[in-house]
Image (cartoon, rainbow over all chains, first blue to last red):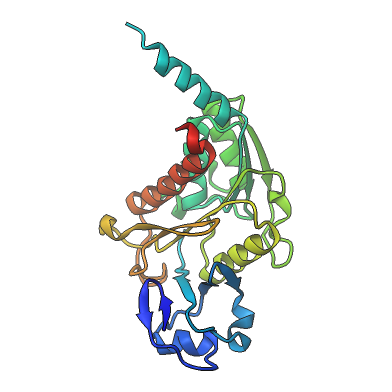
Length: 65
Length: 202
């Protein structure tokens, strides 16, 4: 299992951050992601594998300010 | 009767804030209101970066006045802050923050505030600051558009990143930007800044 924004979610082997965000239906283009406290930059979403038992935080950045 | 304990505590807080510095990226609806609030709170030094000038359409939420239209925002903001307290040092940079050099103005501040408008720029800024200045706390904001729904706003903390966050809000091209919600979230950010700076002293 992995934890995404406090929710328990099934672990999928060799799943990238990009795939996980898609599976979670996080469709916003701008997301800040941390896995076990470490930042994963947007450019690395497609090549970063989500490890089992990890804690993922994803924050949507919404325009306006 | 004077409560000596409170006088001592208030003086300790005043000194701590006076010796602190805060960097603010953006001087629009969030940044202008955050800067003024932190100035009133007594933060001694502010570093503000923005490339824009004041427009009439800004006046429904940003801390500027009609007679400042067309003025460079960071200059107008410094003027307004120094009308409140002329002892506050306001360092201004009138340029656009661009990828790979976004951290530059903020190397010698205690806390950095993300007060930008575009979602893509916000994300780039937060990524870059977290990577290059990992020990400096960053206070960001996402989801200011609209009105009402104050109870949806949360503080979300991820290590050194503090986000004032309404994940259900729409982008600002699909909803209005108006004073109450923008200023509410701006002051929410400013309030987190004080909490970070004062820490155990509170």
